[in-house]
View 1: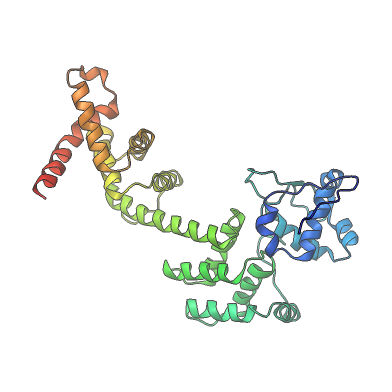
View 2: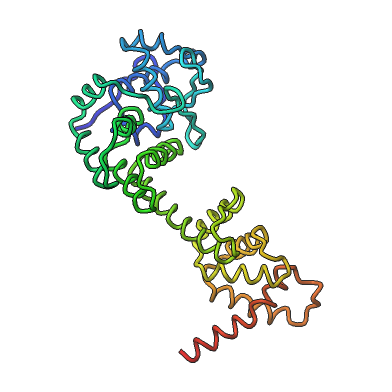
Length: 327
């Protein structure tokens, strides 16, 4: 069947990202998105009360719908004022998102509201039971409120929430407050699909593992990494380097007289990444090739990193080459 669109006297421009979240959006949220996208003057001085009147719903319902659209990355709000806010449609590639919520924390539902939400969502009871089994405890009413908010306010599906709770249990933080905080942080980062969630949790596992290795390498004990140090580790994870590569960069850093310097070590690893080196064998081969081409060059002509590589890697390279021959 072939279809054609009757545009009439004009068109409404929608963010391409809407296609990714349309399945999880409610009728009101879709109507509100169309309303926001339809008129630029409306976006300049968006009135929650006016939108509520136009769509024949309460202001609270508009706030909830607005929170979903903002959290899904479809709009950006410029003001925390709930009665009158400036709204602009989110552009492709623009990742900054301000999420509109009812106060700093998730809303607290009354018994009547909870009953109505359970009536509308027949899977919610099973989700709460599943999360209780994952954490091995019976939830309080406050904890149940948090899970309801993840479904009702943030529009996260059950499998997404179960995955977050399972991750919290796996890393030794089996509490509803932690799982709730993690889910909201991921949501506000624009991670709203299950595939994106699994990818990010896998990255967090790798970051955590490498952080532990780096602590041992630098003799930091249980000290929490600084924000700058954590960013270095995240970057090294993005390089997809093995612990052996990280250790080799550490040895080069220390042997070059820089001490246990993460910034210098990051420079070494970044140079390797830029050169396309992915394994220690490739680094060692590059070192040997460099030595051959520069063996007659004066030391002063070599960069700090080049001299460090030559000094610290010669014994290591020789040992690895001997191990390969003997193996």
